Length: 109
Image 1 (cartoon, rainbow, N blue to C red):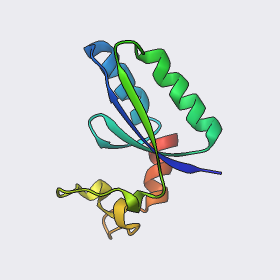
Image 2 (image 1 turned 30 degrees about the horizontal axis):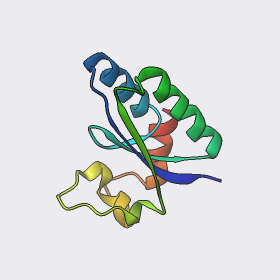
Image 3 (image 1 turned 180 degrees about the vertical axis):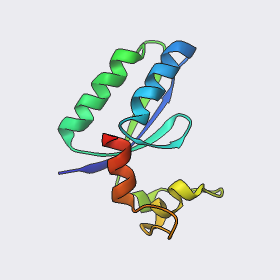
Image 4 (image 1 turned 180 degrees about the horizontal axis):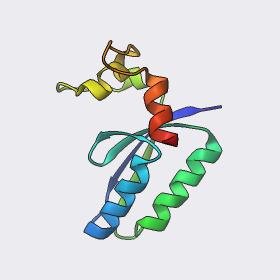
């Protein structure tokens, strides 16, 4: 069963930062520069976290994972880009692909 998670990181080294960011952009939906939304099974989550661990330095970097009930439960105070605006309400706009379409493309290319 797939569940939602919010993954945030603070990576101190520029090279590791680029590696972690590039890795996550292939597997999750970016919400901010270092915050990603994942919709995945427990196995997929474990694989993603292992990939992050391989690219980060766990004594120097801060990686945090938060369970999220649904994307609609994420509160945003500023104007969102069209790419993620419908995600919070669960409604896609005419110019925005559905949540499922965006996540499938983000997670699996």
